[in-house]
Image (cartoon, rainbow, N blue to C red; front, side):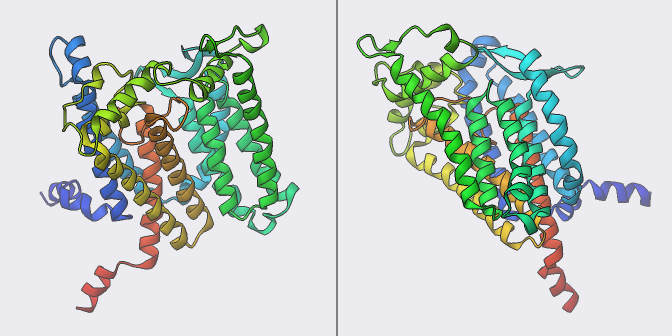
Length: 413
């Protein structure tokens, strides 16, 4: 009986609370974003579920509840693992991601001429290998930064060994998902800058990366017919893969007026305009019936429509607080690997969130990135939860090193 009592107490709410450590503010932000996700995903999928499932509007809500529940468990178990384990696992994960990305480019699920997903056997779940690759890259990069601080300013010994993995991963992601590759590269450069890498070396990389972007803009201008308001016929050399899509999106962003912009951009603007300051109220979105992917890529537009500018500002505030708490954690962590890892993962989540929101309000060309912890569940949602779990693992160990003031007070009493 005593053994049963011990087991039950271990899995009780109080037992889980005692075992839950780390930054309480980040835990609270995770809970808030999860609740927002349930509300908005249910609203965004209401009409779609009614149409596809004969009036059952709760199908996608139940799926999202399942993803949120699984995600919370992933965060919990990831934060219970000592973050030093991820240092030992970093190189393996990075090396594993390379053949997975190559396999995805060759044999992955094709959608809009892009191979981004592979299907896992048995469980029949598709996931974007770029999510795994980003995680492996930032783990490995954090490990290298922590080990090369003595030679960090040197080009051959410090800079080149850290740039090689960044270039490999970004080059393998770019053919199918240019926006993700650019965001991954930008996050890596930001991490290297904070890691005291020579600014001159970083600017050299940035200048090199800007060249193909300028070339893409030049192509967009050259092959745009202003009179007809559409893209000219491209030569064969520019018609391969995703190049026409990249050119078209740049043209849409640069030239298209309101009535000529892409359909999803028009509908997102209408949603934003209808939202006003206070919004139409929870569940009252009208553009969910017209906006493509209102539950993933354009979920922020639905948030603005239903909760107004105040609700939109609240979401931005949450992500900024998340970044602020991660920066505090970076400053507190006594070990370089944990500090860099927490900062890298928080940077990539917040930059992704800001990019998604910028696309939704027309400040950035259309991309395929989702809003972390808010968009409808999938492999990206679960990888986001795993990343947050790692951040909380660093926070938990910092908390243990600093000591728990409450426990000290109890001992003094």
